Length: 157
Length: 406
Picture 1 (tube, each protein chain N blue to C red):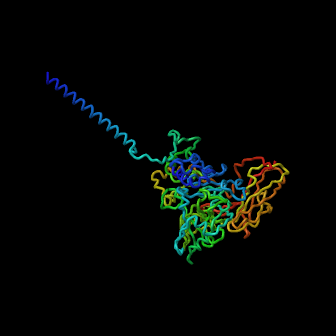
Picture 2: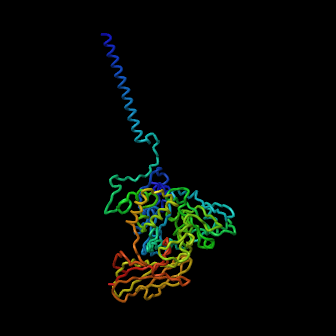
Picture 3: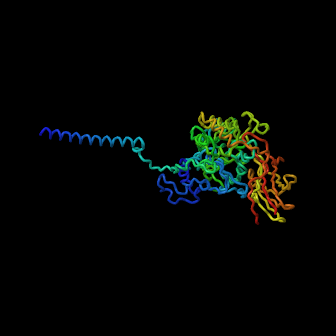
């Protein structure tokens, strides 16, 4: 009987120890997981509140009327390769206001690689050049164009 | 993010320029707090530009005017084009700002604070025409690479500063000096600190002119941030890229300055004329110096409809780089006939000149008024595009506006 009681007590003690150990383990595991997902937890929070543009994820790469809203680039095959490789240093406006043939788009890329720290575009280069030539090709303007987009108004004086 | 930081930091010094009012408790603003007015990325507010100005590029900032916005005799900031090659300097402390003169052809290296520049040398004020070398690029065929300026990358503001000549004489330059090159505080687009966005200059004869200033005021106030605050080289009549902004160093060179955008094809045109689209080797490209003769009709705005029998008053400005404009004409029949019109003398050398005319239309219908200036050497603006060049510089073709007589 005595032995039986003693045995029961021992089992209970071991059980409590196990619970405590398991609890500690669980806390440790959760902490580790949290730290992995948020490594800056113990870094001193910066007093300088950097201004961060809040972007709604859904709308970030929104296309409207065939135009990638964030950059103004035409939606077509290769769009995201252009966005990701060509708008880091300069604005997409520098792309959309220019018109070049294949040879000159390529030579522009080479110039940026040689002098402006543009990286090797690797497999993306063909896609990017095709996108540019297809969507931003030169048009013939001749030696002088007719006046376009005139907004007529009545001149009073 | 960085841009906002720069605005905040640079502006606490020059808050007035940006917001148009003093921030009364600016000195006790909590660190990291950006005044509401500066959180707005709107370039028109940030640079105090008119809403009708056209943004060609926002990284780097390139903004141009339209012809009718340039009607003022002296261009106010709100209508002045911005042509930036890099990122506007982010930490401007005018108390610590200095200008260093160095280079192989300087007799010594000497550094001046802003206060020293202002007190040591006599100050001069001139109206100076600054036109981007690529103004008009959008019209070239085949198209040229770069910002597609139409007609609005030109201005004539009042600049106040000290003569670069006086500074160089104080430092002393060697007899082999041929060129100067400026260095500035703007940052390369790639943020590579080893790269300069632009470092151009001018040959000694241009440098030694009375009107070549190291300026600290535009239109009587501190130079606006986007136009070179606190110190800008101003060399009127030459491509505006010679007029370096945010300058902190000028090197006196015994060779043609070889800084960024001095070499290769930048701000150069073929030494000999080429066919449209022709390939030109770098060594056959020559540096642009004086800008060509040009004019703009700034009133009325294109698209005006007037009643038959009424005369139309037109006005505008004309300029000719290093030269004066000696004759101004207009045509309402696509150049079949030209009528001479009144043109004022420039306020000073290198300032644009103002013309007016009173135009009569023979009958109802659609017209274009074309303007043509002629410089002191008898050279006029072409009606068609001038010589094609790979980078699309120097388009000085006649400006025209559309008019309907009803």
